[in-house]
Length: 192
Image 1: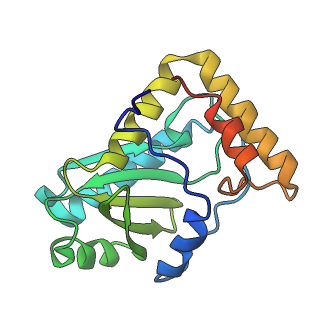
Image 2 (image 1 turned 180 degrees about the horizontal axis):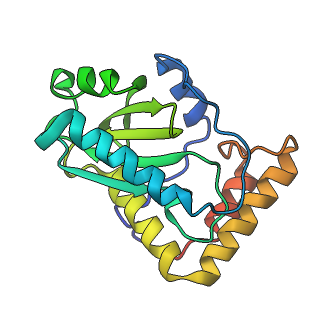
């Protein structure tokens, strides 16, 4: 069976290896999962405005992704945003302005072979992911959010898997899936 180019295989230990590339810590910890909060869309709008005012036309696309972008889905109260810029590696065009606006660079790495910068913002608590045009990961994010918005049964299954992962880990916080069983349970919620 041929794998769709937007599906990436699980690499056990990838998140742990990524921690070695950390530049700084986030300003605000994510906190536990909670019921969907309608204010998250306004929080995203504030982040989008901040980004567009900071870097102007270099903000090619700005998109709300992740669980907070899906009405009715439980989520950690962190706004996930994908930002596309003309050239991620030309940090001088966007990074100083985003830092002046309150963002902090925490990772300079690659995801799925594409250069990636991960910034955070304290208020609203935000993960700002910066990509080149055509990067695979933002397409995955968009497809996943769109799928969950259009498929209530899968959205519910995904929410149940997230809640079960928290319950199994204890401590009330959803961590990145590390065990094969947790990853299989989350992936079972996805089509194909």
